Length: 448
Image (cartoon, rainbow, N blue to C red; front, top):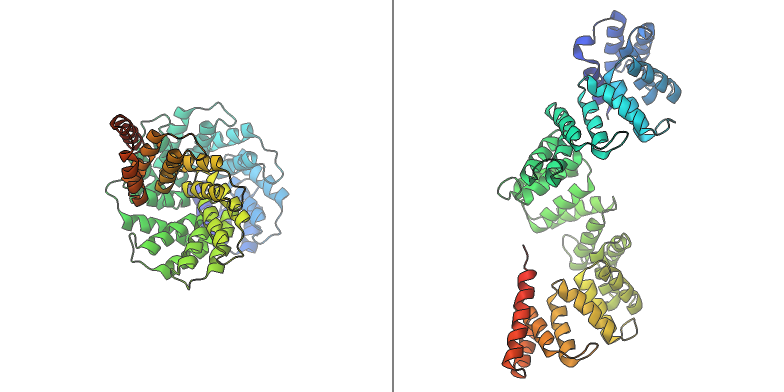
């Protein structure tokens, strides 16, 4: 929180009507607002024994080192005194210390609950939201979704962005309410408008996916930009993607690269991968296989399954890196084990051809089957070939035709040829059976 925002926050925490009881406090408060710390300190120390507001601001001065040497012990002394005297902001802040175990205070959810309750009793929106969070998570108190919903609602109506965001999550999950993605999105938008960073990102997704009304890519981009402007790496990534493909904004691949780089520098594996793609294909930058490999590797090492497959291809071809089939197979395996169908297909290919691994037709079938079930047409065709040949699996022409038919329906030209050839050598009954199995698979796996 910036110094100015902190002062505004404290002003409203203390209550506008209350800031006039002591002339010395008034003078100190005015000096503090103006960053005249020496005068503020002098004035506050004159009334600290009788004015809890002065105690609270003194706690903030010693916490931040404003005109004094930072001192956590003095900070805690003043904060506890202000909380005990009923300053709601101090009560809530003391709750935070117990909740997180900060400043040498032992983590204690029951004490956190106690102080959040005190702050909430004054109808302080931050206290209401923090108390709701305790009920929602069952920390320091038995979980109670109904109480959490009520408290989040009270805080949200007071404009608390965190509470508005949490209400969005509640409606999205349907916890204690009728599930409604639209209602969730409306709360996200309110929270985003109040400055809650992750809510800005979610609001962008809401508009992009048409969850509020008709799909609106322009509004989606506006919200992604808000998040990106605050340094959010996911907002930067989404905005970059919009620029790369011209979704909701004029296409600008150079701008996309600039934003991908900002996100990648914050360790976004998705942005690192997209940078790899840009360098591999010369999108917004000069084509550079070495730089592509560099970014694929960064992303792959973070577990990005798409980048792992891309790195496997580069190692297999020796583009931008020394050719290494064993390493390629290793990266394809990592990708395959995360259910990426292209990674599975390539691992199957490596086993079929003995590239970087010992040739093993049975394992090739295992991985072709996995990729085929995930809808990869090339694997569906390959699996059909394996069943037709009895290579790595028992020969079964009904299964072979089933997979040829599924692959052909997805537009695979080799599968069309294989399907037509297989049908000519099969009985009408077996053809009908295979076609029925293929139709059932396609219906079951049709994208929603």
